[in-house]
Amino acid sequence: MGFIIQTVQLSKKFRDFVALDHLDISVEEGEIFSLLGPNGAGKTTAIKLLTTLLTPSSGDAFIDGISIVKHPFKVRSLIGYVPQMLSADGTLTGYENLILFAKLYDIPPKEAKQRVKQSLEFMNLGEFAHKAVKTYSGGMIRRLEIAQSMLHRPKVLFLDEPTTGLDPIGVKTVWQHILELKQQFNTTILLTTHVMEEADKLSNHIAFLSRGKLAAIGTPTSLKATLNKQDVSLEDVFIYYTKESLDSEKGFHDIVTNRKTTSRLG
Amino acid sequence: MKFLKKTFAITEMEAMKIFHDPTEIFMRAVQPALWLLIFGQVFQRMHPMNGNISYIDFMTPGILAQSVLFISIFYGIAIIWERDLGLTHKFLVTPTPRTALVLGKALSAGLRSVPVMIIVYLLALLLNVKLNRHPLQVMTVLLLVVLGSVLFSTFSLVIACLVKTRERFMGIGQVLTMPLFFASNAIYPIDIMPGWLKTISHINPLTYMIDALRACMLQGQPRTNLWQDLCVLIMVSVALVITGGMLYKRVIS
Image (tube, rainbow over all chains, first blue to last red; front, side):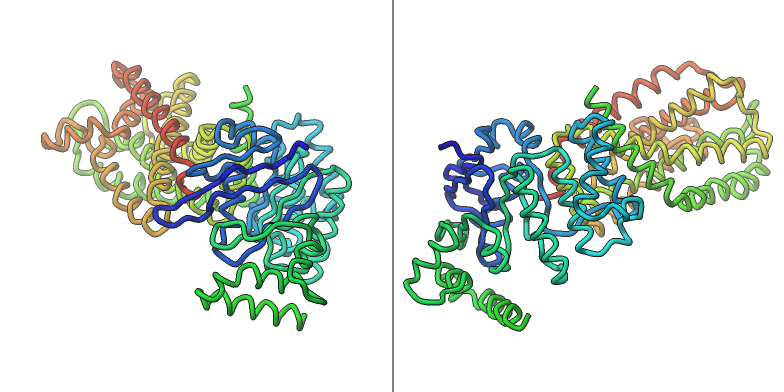
């Protein structure tokens, strides 16, 4: 079977620090694949390598069979990317933001206008199209970003913590739109998240990273089954597979405990 | 073709931003007005120029160049801002040549300089400067203003890619502007400079820009060096745009 994303011993070192250590993952076309792991596990590094923002120290990865090392320029027209921080030019309108990117992705002007309108409608931003982005809420900016990343109909969409910092309604809308995108365009989606519920609901496959290494991989159900207990949540799986790093770095432990508390209360 | 289309897409975006909030354009008119209406007027009374050119005539092209320099030299901070906003990451994942991103921004610095050029011309008319009003000459001045903006804004972007933080960038920007201005023929001729300053002024691109501006803006000025000036400005700009394209990615690492 051909994989749409395949990493081969993909590694990235920053001076002495190994951010990603010989990662081997394969993602099937049309699926939603989640990368999970504590802060500093290498999720964002993996995404930055796959989106050609960073160059690997060793190893390679292939997007639709094209090497990110040998042909980064070709890879760029196949992928869409929504970075972790909410980012759009606040002084421009939503429409103007999208038109700019349509041009950078070589979409012919006539079609660009049509697609921009369509995608704004699709993301329920139609009535705000000509308002400056600085007046948007966080959830709206995120939806605008997703619209932007889909303009050129990429084969693979990379979402780095797509719902971090959004209110519950924003989160639910973004989830819904991610699922719709997958259905309508058969886009493969690779996302990172700290919200276990999000990974559980959306993903076909999940990979756990711990200190730059692959700790476990499988479907949400199969991963839960590995614990051999009843009523296992994905959070338990997370803690089980990343425990080693949690023990040695207490700070991370606190973060996860806090997150568990918040999600239980929320 | 694609290269130019993408370059202009970036420039157009910047033009749109100016259009949405044009106040900065007016603020930029203050500085050249102060130099021409106060500094120039006072210095004029000392009759510093011997020969057939009045001091105010002499300094007008210099002040235009200075305005272009001041607009452009802090331009690089935009890339640091956009990096912090996450926009740079998004530009870099598009199939756009880095040099197009650099040149697009640089041309928009040129766009911001055009209103200042108009203001300096208006002030010059007010002060009875012997302007050369031949359309071809005015067009050449416009070209020089855009070229100078491209040069200094790309220089600024190169520095921004190297220092990566706002604080360091602002520090370096301050350190660079005045020396570039003083080591040029903007407000005094090269002939009267001490030897060491003459040498520096000859490697200062601003000198070449002012020399060319003086030849085109004013009546009856020698034009012997015009082509040489243009060649220097174009070559330095091209070299800087290529360097900027190579360094662009560094700002996110």
